[in-house]
Image (tube, rainbow, N blue to C red):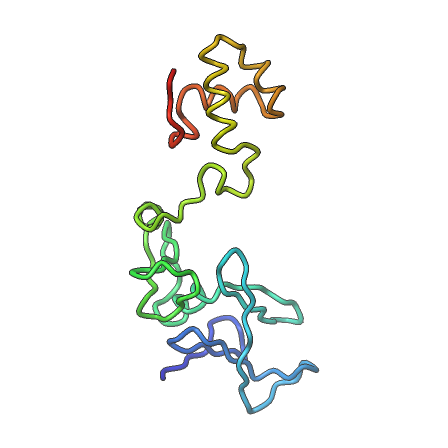
Length: 172
């Protein structure tokens, strides 16, 4: 299996299967023997902590792999898991640089877009939005509804115009 040094991180290698190796000992000294680094999971992605100049940098393995084997990220591109959208499948043959649109299209096809209540930052759930739409249909003012649901008037406006929560059935 091919293994290469990670650019800009002396003493670290990565192989085609996404395994990251270090020749640094726990006391910060460089050795001649490499050991496997155990990755951690962050937002579903595997990442590792790499040190440079006594500072630790957390890097996602799929990005490190592409930067090492394919080259620097082209302007306007993102790392994509394709054809298998599994965020933990970091084999070189499953990764490529792609456009944001290609990545978004992959998420649509695979049903992994974090919209609506799937979005961890959402204050509302689908039933709330359906109720908000019903209140709007009854003629309630957006500002009143916003206070009731502890969201901004702008959020209510976006729901009303269908710019957000598009997947919730509309009756107005």
